[in-house]
Amino acid sequence: MTDIVIVGAGPAGLTAAIYARRANKTVLILDKAAFGGQMVLSPKLENYPGFETVSGSELADKMVNQALELGADVELEEVNEIKGENGCFSVSTEDGNTYECKSVIIAAGCKHRHLGVKNEEKFIGEGISFCAVCDGAFYKDKTVALIGGGNSALQEAVLLSENCKKVIVVQNLDFLTGEKVLQDILSKRENVEVITGAVVSEIQDGEVFSAITIEKTASGEKQKLFVDGMFVAIGLEPENEIFENVASLDSNGYIDSDESCSTKTPGIFVAGDCRKKSVRQITTATADGAVAAVSACRYIDSL
Image 1 (cartoon, rainbow, N blue to C red):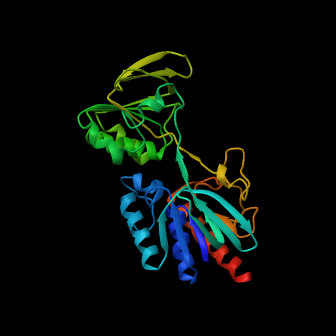
Image 2: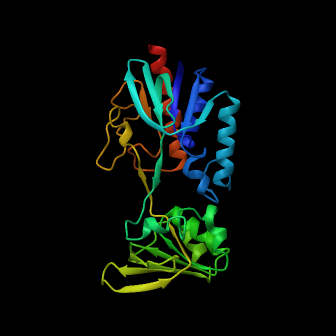
Image 3: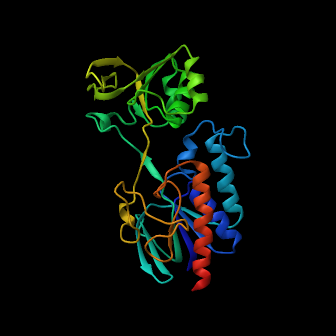
């Protein structure tokens, strides 16, 4: 039996693994995708302590390597159920495997939020992307739309502007919400146009992605934008439904917990973006990971 199973290998899960291994607890990390979580999609991080600038993938590699060097085990499997109580839990995966453990840390992160307009699903991966690092090179010397106005969106826009002929930023609010330093960078790029107070109302159908229609939220005025691709960066949403039997969810689907990262089930803890909180950054995720691991270790020691 493993001491702690960690669901998710983003910054919260990896930090939890590091702390748990340093406390001599056996650890298994399960993740359905690549290790590193959402931070691997960030081309440049400038607000993580200790690094003036670092790519998300580089930071993720360092965290993964540290966890592995300390002896954490990892498996690429998607968790579909957690059951148990009183220091004996079972974590089942889509591959048909079941792992027994004394404690569980849920660090499942979030998924990209979609626009919810017609034809969106049809063109995901075929004109619509959520990652400029992954797909930006396909749009070299082309025109793209970037939907969103927060930090992640503006970082994507900066990256795209380095290779694209034109980048059109579309924000639903009347102002951008990203850091001023990012706004200043974009304002100096001649190939960047910013449209605020507008939403995407339609994606043109056809064999290939070719145009979107945006609508001004105040006036209802519509405008068609002919673009070769669209990058969506309007935030994240949790996928916590499978944990409802062991953790309480708020109205937005995030897991309720206290400052010890505990859930309603003793022995099950939560960390990172899947937890109800006011700030979602890599630094807050790593903080959660440390707290959840310490709480899990204390729980196991009390059995």
